[in-house]
Image 1 (cartoon, rainbow, N blue to C red):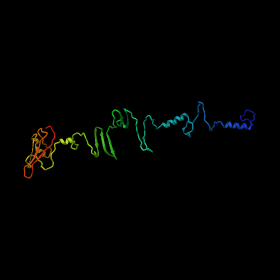
Image 2 (image 1 turned 90 degrees about the vertical axis):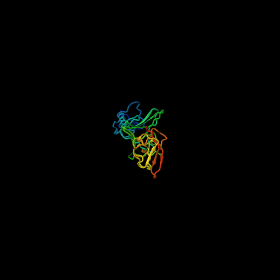
Image 3 (image 1 turned 120 degrees about the vertical axis):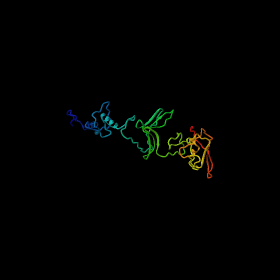
Image 4 (image 1 turned 45 degrees about the vertical axis):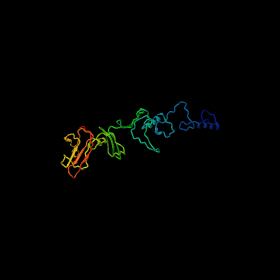
Length: 278
Protein backbone atom coordinates (compact mmCIF):
# COMPACT_ATOMS: atom_id res chain seq x y z
CA UNK A 1 0.00 0.00 0.00
CA UNK A 2 1.06 3.61 -0.45
CA UNK A 3 3.05 5.21 2.40
CA UNK A 4 0.74 7.25 4.52
CA UNK A 5 3.35 9.98 4.77
CA UNK A 6 3.21 10.42 0.97
CA UNK A 7 7.01 10.45 0.60
CA UNK A 8 7.29 8.12 -2.38
CA UNK A 9 6.16 4.88 -3.80
CA UNK A 10 7.31 2.85 -0.78
CA UNK A 11 4.87 0.32 0.41
CA UNK A 12 4.12 -0.74 3.99
CA UNK A 13 2.79 -3.86 5.48
CA UNK A 14 -0.31 -4.28 7.61
CA UNK A 15 1.92 -4.47 10.66
CA UNK A 16 3.41 -1.10 9.79
CA UNK A 17 -0.07 0.40 9.42
CA UNK A 18 -1.11 -0.95 12.81
CA UNK A 19 2.03 0.44 14.39
CA UNK A 20 1.38 3.84 12.86
CA UNK A 21 -2.20 3.86 14.11
CA UNK A 22 -1.00 3.00 17.59
CA UNK A 23 1.49 5.83 17.39
CA UNK A 24 -1.23 8.27 16.32
CA UNK A 25 -3.65 7.11 19.02
CA UNK A 26 -1.04 7.78 21.68
CA UNK A 27 -0.82 11.44 20.69
CA UNK A 28 -3.12 14.34 21.60
CA UNK A 29 -5.27 15.65 18.78
CA UNK A 30 -4.93 19.44 18.58
CA UNK A 31 -8.62 19.70 17.67
CA UNK A 32 -9.52 18.31 21.09
CA UNK A 33 -8.74 15.15 22.92
CA UNK A 34 -8.27 13.52 26.33
CA UNK A 35 -5.02 12.74 28.13
CA UNK A 36 -4.41 9.58 30.11
CA UNK A 37 -1.45 10.90 32.09
CA UNK A 38 0.15 14.02 33.48
CA UNK A 39 1.39 16.82 31.26
CA UNK A 40 4.91 17.96 32.20
CA UNK A 41 5.54 21.37 30.69
CA UNK A 42 9.15 21.63 31.90
CA UNK A 43 8.73 25.27 32.92
CA UNK A 44 6.78 26.26 29.81
CA UNK A 45 3.38 27.90 29.81
CA UNK A 46 -0.04 26.77 28.72
CA UNK A 47 -1.58 29.69 26.89
CA UNK A 48 -4.82 30.58 25.21
CA UNK A 49 -7.06 29.36 28.01
CA UNK A 50 -10.62 30.62 28.34
CA UNK A 51 -11.04 34.02 29.99
CA UNK A 52 -14.84 33.96 30.14
CA UNK A 53 -15.83 32.59 33.53
CA UNK A 54 -19.27 31.56 32.30
CA UNK A 55 -17.71 29.17 29.74
CA UNK A 56 -15.75 27.23 32.35
CA UNK A 57 -18.13 24.41 33.26
CA UNK A 58 -16.25 21.86 35.35
CA UNK A 59 -14.41 22.37 38.62
CA UNK A 60 -11.49 20.42 37.11
CA UNK A 61 -11.15 22.71 34.08
CA UNK A 62 -7.94 24.72 33.79
CA UNK A 63 -8.39 28.46 34.11
CA UNK A 64 -6.29 31.37 32.97
CA UNK A 65 -4.47 33.61 35.42
CA UNK A 66 -6.90 36.44 34.65
CA UNK A 67 -9.86 34.14 35.30
CA UNK A 68 -8.37 32.99 38.60
CA UNK A 69 -7.85 36.59 39.69
CA UNK A 70 -11.41 37.42 38.74
CA UNK A 71 -12.73 34.42 40.65
CA UNK A 72 -10.63 35.39 43.66
CA UNK A 73 -11.82 39.00 43.60
CA UNK A 74 -15.45 37.95 43.21
CA UNK A 75 -15.03 35.49 46.06
CA UNK A 76 -13.54 38.13 48.34
CA UNK A 77 -16.29 40.62 47.63
CA UNK A 78 -18.62 40.80 50.63
CA UNK A 79 -16.06 39.18 52.91
CA UNK A 80 -14.09 40.64 55.81
CA UNK A 81 -10.50 39.87 56.62
CA UNK A 82 -9.85 37.99 59.86
CA UNK A 83 -7.46 40.81 60.71
CA UNK A 84 -10.38 43.27 60.86
CA UNK A 85 -12.77 45.19 58.63
CA UNK A 86 -16.16 46.90 58.37
CA UNK A 87 -19.50 45.16 57.92
CA UNK A 88 -22.38 46.74 56.02
CA UNK A 89 -25.03 44.21 57.04
CA UNK A 90 -26.35 42.22 59.98
CA UNK A 91 -24.40 39.41 61.64
CA UNK A 92 -26.58 36.48 62.68
CA UNK A 93 -25.08 33.82 64.95
CA UNK A 94 -27.16 30.64 64.62
CA UNK A 95 -27.00 28.05 67.38
CA UNK A 96 -26.94 25.05 65.02
CA UNK A 97 -26.33 21.84 66.96
CA UNK A 98 -24.33 23.57 69.71
CA UNK A 99 -25.60 24.32 73.22
CA UNK A 100 -24.13 27.83 73.42
CA UNK A 101 -23.17 30.40 70.81
CA UNK A 102 -20.64 32.96 72.10
CA UNK A 103 -19.34 36.27 70.83
CA UNK A 104 -16.19 36.29 72.83
CA UNK A 105 -12.67 37.40 73.57
CA UNK A 106 -11.03 35.13 76.14
CA UNK A 107 -7.31 35.89 75.86
CA UNK A 108 -6.98 39.37 77.40
CA UNK A 109 -3.66 40.03 79.09
CA UNK A 110 -2.80 42.64 81.69
CA UNK A 111 -3.54 46.24 80.61
CA UNK A 112 -5.67 45.16 77.63
CA UNK A 113 -9.41 45.52 77.13
CA UNK A 114 -12.48 44.49 75.15
CA UNK A 115 -15.09 47.00 73.98
CA UNK A 116 -18.46 46.54 72.30
CA UNK A 117 -19.43 49.84 70.68
CA UNK A 118 -23.13 50.71 70.48
CA UNK A 119 -23.29 53.24 67.67
CA UNK A 120 -20.71 55.72 69.01
CA UNK A 121 -17.63 55.70 71.23
CA UNK A 122 -19.73 57.45 73.91
CA UNK A 123 -22.05 54.43 74.09
CA UNK A 124 -20.27 51.16 74.79
CA UNK A 125 -19.78 48.16 77.04
CA UNK A 126 -16.16 47.98 78.12
CA UNK A 127 -13.90 45.76 80.21
CA UNK A 128 -10.24 46.40 80.94
CA UNK A 129 -8.09 43.75 82.55
CA UNK A 130 -5.77 45.11 85.24
CA UNK A 131 -4.19 42.38 87.32
CA UNK A 132 -2.94 44.79 90.02
CA UNK A 133 -6.32 46.52 90.40
CA UNK A 134 -9.21 44.40 89.02
CA UNK A 135 -11.76 46.53 87.19
CA UNK A 136 -15.56 46.17 86.84
CA UNK A 137 -17.40 45.95 83.55
CA UNK A 138 -18.31 49.48 82.50
CA UNK A 139 -21.47 50.53 80.65
CA UNK A 140 -20.85 53.93 79.06
CA UNK A 141 -23.68 56.14 77.80
CA UNK A 142 -24.12 59.79 76.91
CA UNK A 143 -27.82 59.76 77.88
CA UNK A 144 -28.25 57.14 80.58
CA UNK A 145 -29.16 53.47 80.53
CA UNK A 146 -32.74 52.17 80.60
CA UNK A 147 -33.74 48.64 81.64
CA UNK A 148 -37.11 47.35 80.46
CA UNK A 149 -39.16 44.15 80.74
CA UNK A 150 -41.75 43.51 78.03
CA UNK A 151 -41.57 47.16 76.99
CA UNK A 152 -42.14 48.49 80.51
CA UNK A 153 -39.57 50.70 82.22
CA UNK A 154 -37.96 49.13 85.30
CA UNK A 155 -34.88 51.20 86.09
CA UNK A 156 -33.26 54.17 84.37
CA UNK A 157 -29.72 55.06 85.40
CA UNK A 158 -28.96 58.69 84.62
CA UNK A 159 -29.74 60.88 81.64
CA UNK A 160 -28.19 63.89 80.01
CA UNK A 161 -27.71 66.38 82.86
CA UNK A 162 -29.64 64.24 85.39
CA UNK A 163 -27.34 61.82 87.19
CA UNK A 164 -29.88 59.88 89.23
CA UNK A 165 -31.36 56.40 89.31
CA UNK A 166 -35.10 56.40 88.57
CA UNK A 167 -36.92 53.24 89.69
CA UNK A 168 -40.34 52.56 88.17
CA UNK A 169 -41.26 49.58 90.34
CA UNK A 170 -40.91 48.38 93.93
CA UNK A 171 -37.51 47.45 95.34
CA UNK A 172 -37.54 44.23 97.37
CA UNK A 173 -34.56 44.22 99.74
CA UNK A 174 -34.95 40.60 100.96
CA UNK A 175 -34.02 41.50 104.55
CA UNK A 176 -31.00 43.58 103.55
CA UNK A 177 -30.12 47.15 104.50
CA UNK A 178 -30.11 50.40 102.58
CA UNK A 179 -27.10 52.15 104.09
CA UNK A 180 -25.22 55.45 104.04
CA UNK A 181 -28.31 57.58 103.40
CA UNK A 182 -28.21 61.35 103.70
CA UNK A 183 -30.71 63.06 106.00
CA UNK A 184 -34.07 63.66 104.29
CA UNK A 185 -34.90 66.98 102.67
CA UNK A 186 -38.27 66.53 100.96
CA UNK A 187 -41.35 65.11 102.74
CA UNK A 188 -41.15 61.82 100.81
CA UNK A 189 -37.40 61.30 101.27
CA UNK A 190 -36.28 58.18 103.13
CA UNK A 191 -35.08 58.85 106.67
CA UNK A 192 -32.20 57.22 108.52
CA UNK A 193 -32.44 55.70 111.98
CA UNK A 194 -30.12 58.40 113.28
CA UNK A 195 -32.36 61.14 111.89
CA UNK A 196 -35.46 59.62 113.47
CA UNK A 197 -33.72 59.12 116.81
CA UNK A 198 -32.58 62.76 116.87
CA UNK A 199 -35.81 64.24 115.57
CA UNK A 200 -38.09 65.91 118.13
CA UNK A 201 -41.56 64.45 117.90
CA UNK A 202 -44.92 64.99 119.52
CA UNK A 203 -47.22 62.57 121.25
CA UNK A 204 -50.22 61.80 118.98
CA UNK A 205 -52.08 59.30 121.15
CA UNK A 206 -54.79 61.97 121.64
CA UNK A 207 -55.20 61.35 125.39
CA UNK A 208 -54.49 65.06 125.67
CA UNK A 209 -56.41 67.58 123.57
CA UNK A 210 -54.72 70.16 121.37
CA UNK A 211 -53.09 72.66 123.70
CA UNK A 212 -52.71 76.24 122.51
CA UNK A 213 -51.94 77.47 126.04
CA UNK A 214 -51.99 76.20 129.59
CA UNK A 215 -55.34 75.98 131.40
CA UNK A 216 -57.56 76.69 128.33
CA UNK A 217 -58.63 73.02 128.03
CA UNK A 218 -58.19 71.97 131.63
CA UNK A 219 -54.58 70.87 131.22
CA UNK A 220 -51.29 72.35 132.27
CA UNK A 221 -47.95 71.44 130.70
CA UNK A 222 -44.74 72.12 132.56
CA UNK A 223 -41.13 71.15 131.89
CA UNK A 224 -37.79 71.10 133.61
CA UNK A 225 -36.54 73.75 131.17
CA UNK A 226 -37.90 76.02 128.45
CA UNK A 227 -35.73 77.90 125.97
CA UNK A 228 -37.94 81.01 125.85
CA UNK A 229 -41.58 82.07 125.54
CA UNK A 230 -41.76 80.69 122.00
CA UNK A 231 -40.84 77.18 123.13
CA UNK A 232 -43.37 76.53 125.92
CA UNK A 233 -43.85 73.01 127.20
CA UNK A 234 -47.45 72.93 125.98
CA UNK A 235 -46.14 73.20 122.38
CA UNK A 236 -45.27 69.51 122.66
CA UNK A 237 -49.03 68.83 122.72
CA UNK A 238 -50.00 71.48 120.19
CA UNK A 239 -51.10 70.62 116.67
CA UNK A 240 -48.99 72.26 113.97
CA UNK A 241 -45.43 73.33 113.54
CA UNK A 242 -44.70 74.16 117.17
CA UNK A 243 -41.79 72.95 119.28
CA UNK A 244 -40.74 72.76 122.88
CA UNK A 245 -37.02 73.28 123.48
CA UNK A 246 -34.85 73.32 126.57
CA UNK A 247 -32.39 76.01 127.44
CA UNK A 248 -29.25 74.18 126.41
CA UNK A 249 -30.10 71.02 128.39
CA UNK A 250 -29.53 67.91 126.32
CA UNK A 251 -30.19 65.13 128.80
CA UNK A 252 -32.04 64.41 132.07
CA UNK A 253 -34.88 66.82 131.23
CA UNK A 254 -38.59 66.15 131.69
CA UNK A 255 -42.01 67.36 130.61
CA UNK A 256 -45.21 67.02 132.63
CA UNK A 257 -48.88 67.27 131.67
CA UNK A 258 -51.39 67.82 134.45
CA UNK A 259 -55.17 67.57 134.31
CA UNK A 260 -56.82 70.26 136.41
CA UNK A 261 -60.24 68.56 136.68
CA UNK A 262 -61.43 65.45 138.51
CA UNK A 263 -62.17 63.64 135.27
CA UNK A 264 -58.51 63.42 134.23
CA UNK A 265 -55.21 62.39 135.72
CA UNK A 266 -51.65 63.49 136.11
CA UNK A 267 -49.05 62.10 133.76
CA UNK A 268 -45.33 62.60 133.53
CA UNK A 269 -43.62 61.93 130.21
CA UNK A 270 -39.92 61.64 129.60
CA UNK A 271 -39.12 63.05 126.17
CA UNK A 272 -36.25 62.68 123.73
CA UNK A 273 -35.17 65.56 121.56
CA UNK A 274 -32.56 66.67 119.09
CA UNK A 275 -29.52 68.85 119.58
CA UNK A 276 -30.88 71.81 117.62
CA UNK A 277 -28.22 74.23 118.78
CA UNK A 278 -30.66 76.33 120.77
